[in-house]
Length: 490
Image (cartoon, rainbow, N blue to C red; front, top):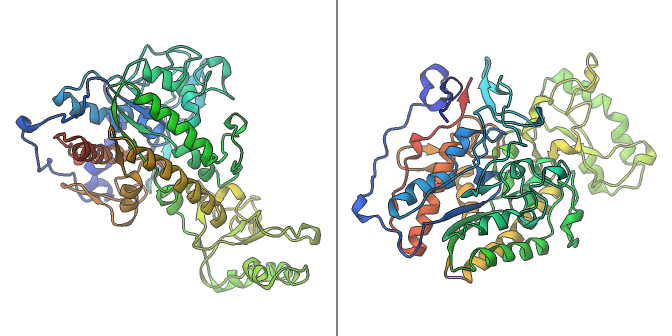
């Protein structure tokens, strides 16, 4: 399907008009001699990628055709074709609008673009046309399903339309080989000779992106009882992941395992500062007066001096920390005191919260401004304690992935955690340019603040090819990430 160019203008190529980026990147400067290309000990005849939205090519809060065509597995397959790789199929959506329909009614939103003046993210103006009940004919080499957690890959009924919305995934429904097939079964049907497995991101991400409103399921070994936004138990992950790898390697297939990045390093968590409230002297004085009774009450309910200090709310002229809810604080509601405090640098304010900070919770009432008079809700913030739970789970998941990779010569490990850490600190120079994690303009992340741009996926593909070369003796041609799109203007 042709890209609708009127809605897919690459920001990097409209720099003169927008001032967002410096210029379009030059052609890739380091081509590989085709005569030297080799698969090494790998066999790319039947390449399958299994995972979640990052594998599917999801970007800008949606799955859409251009994103799928520039998914990292699609980019890899193009390069594998030069060394014996076979056909590569994907369950392409019907348009570049994104979103899903079920019986004609929207069930997933369309993609984000930059629009307006000043430029800001907003959904495209067109409606979705991808109908979930229009089942696509597979099998598909790209088995990336947005929203999938580790244990979903073996879940019967995950692709059964009759189980929507509670126990099925609409993205898998439209591509499942049969209603009660599992993702891993549809993958194994293809008898892959080479695979990439990147799963586990949503086992922490769903909890984190909802501000820790889900449950920590540590010690609960029955994932069928988990809520959508719950944090997966590491033992459940370990057993599930080990089973997936065992199945994928049963026929001596080689593959790359991809570990899990630190979710708090992505723009969804790093764009909005904890001290996002600017106040002048008069406003700070008035706000302090409004909290005087609350602060005085803290000393009368038996709290420790440390917690009193933690919960005391004060403002000054300049930038001020947001007032936030924190359910981990001692319950003092019996004395009429809410569980609130001011945010610190260890708390992560979620990207969508930026639209409400500084606005009135009750229109026309300036005492209800979000972040000052009205605390930011639990779902607006990933608190320091919640972030610690995510980090601990992520570390346990990565230990499992790395241990399995280390124990099998047919497996290589791509350190995505290290790559994205570099992206969030110094940026990544890919030879003809650099991407960073700066929201909207850095080139690495799409407008949802979670998923890479096509350029970001191209960088990931090059890293995976580097891993294959190192572990399996291959010689592969890298792509020029500068030739791939970043964010778009409508």
